[in-house]
Image (cartoon, rainbow, N blue to C red):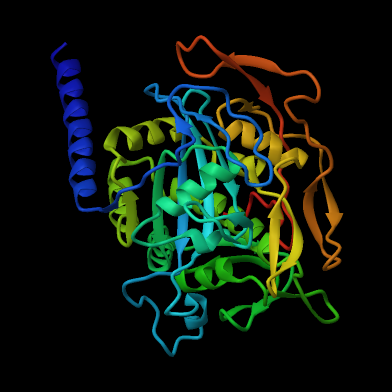
Length: 414
């Protein structure tokens, strides 16, 4: 009994220290105030499909332990240089005067289901910018010191609620990759991007350090691969970059787990790096992070491959620039938006209907959905939306919808 009591005391002290340390570090975070769209209410009518940018009422479930949406913004804006000006990877930082959101991802964490899913928004989506009467690319809604306009734009256009925001600078991304000892990525072809400095001379499982990883995930219009005869462009532009970024996120999480991120000491070290050059909203608390950690405690990062999506749309020439008009009625987008609205829950089993097809723009192989099961198509089961909640939501299978050149699914490359 004495030994057991002593062990419990040590565990409690360790847990208390972890909470104290996390709270202490959170106090050092740079924070911004976010305000939500006027269409957001805690109670009200059910969220419905949002068409052509028209707003719809959004119901928010604020029950403790309920699923939450985290808006992750990878920003061009940076307050200090983290790559030497004469480095071959300096191009990966882009225009030093830019303050656009380079990457916009919504991460949904469902503690009750032990699930996580990501939804990427192409930077060229043509939407109505919140608080204005003008149309513009969604990345132009981002303001580094005031992310509310981007939050409201997403809420009004897609009918999903943004619980928290996390803005990550390019330097923070690079530091995180280096902190886990680099991330391994399998390349099917020699690959290059002369603009960002990416240069993969031969196919294989390649370890990317922070600089190379930044050049890789930033590569978009000038991403090229060698098919054995000549260099070819990935004509899918931002779609291809989204597919590569989503794959990289899964691999980076896997590397963090392999490194021991579930160990308190390792987690503390990674936390120190992660909080550098990161800006969060004023309401993000240690309880939110604890729920996030609890939900992901037994989560296998490889599952993200089956739960990674992008907003679909059609290309259009508008005002002398190429834009993407979002199609919220497309089967996959419509189904996954229901999940992010809390009106459906993803199945624990990855869809078995993904096939390998050819990308029309490039002729190279990539994984694409052959069939998508939406909430209205086929049998589904129902589960409680949150522990103790009286309502139920359908469980659905939604196949991923990647496009462009992305790494093959090689679990040995980690």
